[in-house]
Image (cartoon, rainbow, N blue to C red):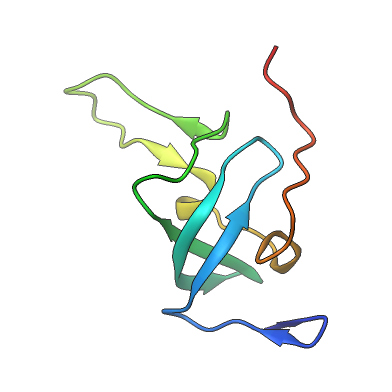
Length: 86
């Protein structure tokens, strides 16, 4: 998939960001519905799109870059979050 002449591949290390404040480096794990699923590095910032569930919960923690993906314009470009925690 290309964006402004750039192409991205599974296994490529990239900088990512989301509109809800998550950002950092990670590795592209898969492509689904024209979105890139990123496996973020441990030191990536978790914005408000991270959902943690209590220990013992049947639900797994969810995080948009990892579970829902980001669009190509949110890869290797400056962060531009639209949501600010207040």
